[in-house]
Image (spheres, rainbow, N blue to C red):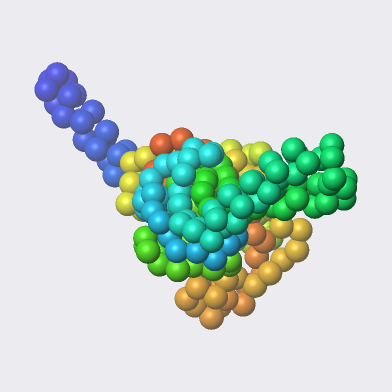
Amino acid sequence: MNPKKVILILIAVALIALLAWKLLKRGEFLYADTIEATEVDISPRVSSVIASFDAKEGQSVHAGDPLVRLSCEDIKLGADIAERDFKRAQRLREGSMTEEAYDRLKNKRDDAALKLDWCAIKAPMDSTVLSTYHEANELVSPGAKLLTLADLREVWAIVYVPGTLLAKLSLDMPVEAILPEMKGRVFTGRISHINDEAEFTPKNVQTREERTRLVFGVKVKFPNPDGVLKPGMTVEARLPKA
């Protein structure tokens, strides 16, 4: 046979195989859900005006980094007075001051110093600033949400699978997933939890038939060192066929 014909036949076979593989992959069922992460809302412990808002949305921060500084004029004044009173008590302790009065002034000084420390709000963990809700010069009170942090180093998604698939799943089992926007990139995670009880398919499933099916939630954790996976993104996980 002519060598050129052999080459053409081999190329044709390869193209047919590639087309068949793509068709098979297209028909593959992927379990989709949104990415979640450990989120922490940061609130002030005292009422004050915001002196500076150092945290910016999307910023990576380390534990102890400054996020927000409150002006706290009244607290600073109280702390200065309490410090002076305590130093005076130290000088009088060996003389006319009772131990009870000394302890009272010491506790007052310590309490004022603690509240003053609350005026400098710092990051409690290595994290990313997801959202900020206030600006400098605004008055805030305890319980007001200043910003939201998220630990994006490890994220997860909970996919819902039929009971017939449970026998093929196990804890710590590797799971591959993709982002619809990045289909060429595979993210490998591991199953960290499988719900013991069935539940109805979440309401965001569109068809009535699917909403009435009982499913089990399966939590898949993904390492995310480069921060590509972010809360709210849809991830599609590849699991064994039921």
